[in-house]
Length: 566
Image (spheres, rainbow, N blue to C red):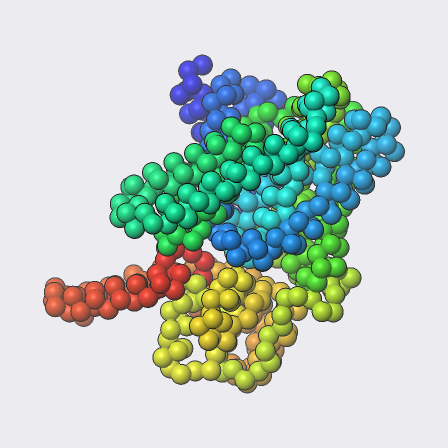
């Protein structure tokens, strides 16, 4: 079959499966993997141009990790580096030991047991970043921690993939490991110097043309990923480093926004290819062992990570949500076991077993990550064991504020400026540590907190608050805020944001005082301008100048991303 026809059929099937997933309200990532199973040898065997699909998938991986890196400046890495290393190493070590013990009990010989155990220890950076991005949690504390320890896992996986062939051939030595580490340090140093002394100085020139900015971003992201892969490192690490190198540029959000459509298309190709390459073998014979090992990954891995983060002083919701990010195995796991088959260390049946575990855990973890807020609401009373009394995430200052603003990005920024002008004594609550740090530096009363955490809301003294504004886009969170406020102060006015008419009406049914519909308000405001000014060019010129000044202030405050959160 011609490549174009083959690709077209795959896209049509992917769209049909995506429609089904939407109707069933299931994560689309599951639909993409199902599409891969349908078009692969397991069902219709449509995909014959495997190399082409693999290439499209690699481009998607590079762009996804590049855009994630754009959200990680060096300050974030320094802040969460310690917890990432400790959590990453602890989880890999404990999971490997537990997996090895279980495999021995299941009757595996030592070497296959080691391969399966180490495969269970690695989580998929690609899948988790896709889920977190789709959920809109890329700036939330648990996501920043997860990105860190997933990178630690990826580094360990790369070392194993390089070390196993050398170990098998007897060529593994201190010098080869040292050379590998020096190469990595030199690559990172090259990227840092290039971004510091060339790109940062040329940023204005690069940003003058949106088309050139788009082309430069793709060239930089994919080029650095390819460079890292050429020297034996993973393209994921290269793409992420490329993004981090540009994280301080003023145009970083514009770059990220322009790459979103391209990223989404290619990453769909990656998951379709992943599904098409899954080799299940004798499912009936493998299923009992696969279920037991999947339970370790889906339940054991989150518990391990929750325990580690709890010991380090993080709150139970952050620990739970971070724990869910390790509830699946990685594409590195499949590659590692496939390498073991090539080296003659394990049989094809072991690869089929790990593939089946991958399918089960990827499906399961998708629901855990996407619905972590709802799961936490149910499990919160039973999670106290995972939280120390002196948890690191601070409680709010008690009382003394007439207004509380939840969320300070895009819509929240406008409220912030208005509250300043009014001279109100207000408090800003946001789940992005960077936002809190920036506001605190400006002298604004700001506290880190997750409004979707009922325990957290109960730490706020709403008894004397006159107005509560939530620009958080999640309807469940806004309902929690409303109930917490009204329980403490029936007279307080609660104003929330909704992006769907159905959500707005349900909020009014709940008793919320006012619901902001940004898209409808924007159109209504523009229509009123037409009625008011008609074709008066002078009036529009005055309004235009004020608007430009306002937009420039927002850009300087770090709110230039047109598709940012609330």
